[in-house]
Image (tube, rainbow, N blue to C red):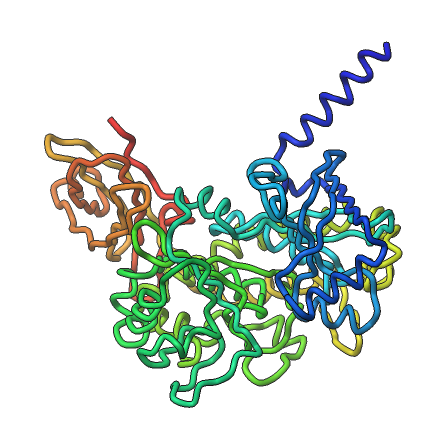
Length: 522
């Protein structure tokens, strides 16, 4: 009997490690052990003198031990404000191969990023936001972890997947592209000869790369030449932006930020918290990062704090004419891109707000972690704040933070009003037929509109676009209007279609470049 019990627990432990480390339905058990009882003082000293240096310790994750890992405090406001209040629950960064090279935490995970829910009494903003982002764009995953250091329980943290070489390899198939973290070094001096910019907003500041060093952190050996080329094209010739930028994924990022009012991002006053990765097709792809203040948790847009009503009714076209936000204003100055962006916003609204899917997931996550939050003696906020902030506003150090589902319901009402009366185009079908030289891609619709085909010939080649032409014979045969474009034979052809009328656009499939159609290999 005992043998079978031992086998059962061994099997369960193996199963736990085999599942996705960032499974949203798992709460990881993380226990860190330092030999020195003065570990906190040493971590503080290292941060103050050598910010990226680490203290060696051991860590146990869900019962599995890893030795000689490197630990440091992380974060800016989440660290400084918490330290100032003499709270123990500080954000942590743990490196698996600090001393033992090639050691990882499973699935080649080398870094744990543990956040303390700073300014999020609901506890769920970051995990919920990444849950949504994962269904829209290329983005990290996140879940929860219970963290103990030297047998002192620090409480429930958010554990977020690191945007590193492993992430890039998994998402893009390569990890050697040009890679920037777009988050200003707030202590970096302003160079007098540089034109004025605005944080990491991709404003043109002249041809000297030194003007960008303190704002865009290069994560590999070279890349400023390519970054300046992106910024220059965006500034001077945005109609050619698709040559150096994945425009569709950029529009998705803006749609995500605007719909859920994630202003601690490119969109808000600080214009930061994103990465740029130049993939094998030589186009930059933006990557979301640091979502703990999503769902209206950050109010500063421009030079003022928004009121509750201004958060609830935050315009989808905010910054569309703002020269200090060229990644929004320059792209949305192109009518087709503006219509595609609004179609993406509408997709989020119809698939996650109308059906209450996002609100229900927020409620589920809150109930899921409630028993552990109740035991969190080092919580930055009271248990009552946690319970209330799911649905209602609470005030933390005189900072009002709206409820998560309160914000979601308000956005639902705002978007319902915004899209009321705006027609939707209907694409009846999209199909292809092979001939002796390649493939004919067809679009059938009853609409008076122009169809555009976006296609790429290899998995990591950038999308090309072309306006499709009507096949009148097929239109007469099938009824409606049938449009066609001929693609030469090639392997792994991915494509999607955008139907554009005078006022709106419709994308098929709805998630466009994130879920394109595919002509299979022969």
